[in-house]
Image (cartoon, rainbow, N blue to C red; front, side, top):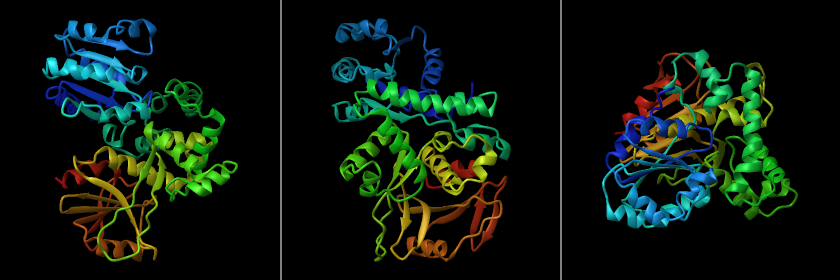
Length: 387
C-alpha cells in the first residue's frame, strides 16, 4: 500500500473532531485509507452504503448511532444517504467525543451542500486526491508514468500501458452511465461525455460558457455553466479563479478550467502512450494542469490559489497568497526552461515574496535574479515556506 500524505492529517482531525468527512472521486483510494485507519481502532464498524444490507442497518439512524457510541463508525459512499447528516448533528451533540465518525463521499453536489447543515464545528473536511508526485519515488521515470496514467491507483499501478488506458476508459464510462445517475444527475451520459471532451481540448484555457454552449448544439450559457459545476462538484474538474491584486490594471476575470487528473485528460483525448503525449498539442497544457494539482494538494491552510493575467497579456500560471506572503509559479514543459518578459512583469506587479519555475527536472538550479527552476517534488517544501 502506498502511504498517502493525507494520512497524518486524517489521524490528527479524528483525534480532534467527533467526525471527519473524507471527500474524493471514486476509485481514488478513500476506502483503502479508511480501512487502514479503522484497523487502528478496536471494534471499528465499517458500512458501505452502496450495499442494501448495510443501508438497512441504518433504517433507524438515531437508534443505530446511539448504540455504537463506543466505536469508530466508518460510513462509505455517504452521499447515498444524504439525510443521514441531519441525524448526525444531534447524535454528535449527545456525545462530542473525538473520532466517532469517518464519512467517505464521492463528492456529489448533494454531499457538498451538507456543509450548510448545522455541523459546523462538529466535523472536519478533508479531500483525498489521486496519487501525488511527493508520495512516490522521486525520479523522472516515475514522474512520467504518474503524469501519463494519472493518479488513480489502479491506473497508475496497472501492469501495462494498454491496461492502464483501458481502466481509465472504463472509469469514464462507469462514471457517466452509473455513478452520476446514482447521485441524482439526470443529464444524458452522451451529452456530458461530449462536454467533458470539450473541456479536455480546452485544458488550461479561459472558460467561455456561451462558446461551449454553442458547441453543444446551441445550449445556453447557463446550461454549460451547470455542466461545469457538476464536474467541479465531483472533483474531476478544477475551476481556477483569477487572482485580483490591487495593481490598477485591467485584469482577466474569467476562470481557467483544468481536468484534475492528467490520466483522465489523456484518456478523453485518446492519448495512450508517452510518445503520443509528447507529440500532442495538449502536452504543455497537460503538464501545467498536472502541476496545478500538485500545488493544490499541498496548499497550506488559509492559502488562496489562483492565476494572474492582465488584458495586456502579462501572465503568471499560479499565484498562492497566504497572509502577506505571495508565491508565484510559472510552469514550463522543458528540461531547460526560459521565461519571457511577462513573467518578470508579473513578478513586479504582484510584489512576490518568491517566484519559481516548475519543470520536469531532477534537481533545482538557479535561473537568474533570485528565481530558481525546481522539480515537482520540491513543491511541498516551497509551500511550507508560506507558513
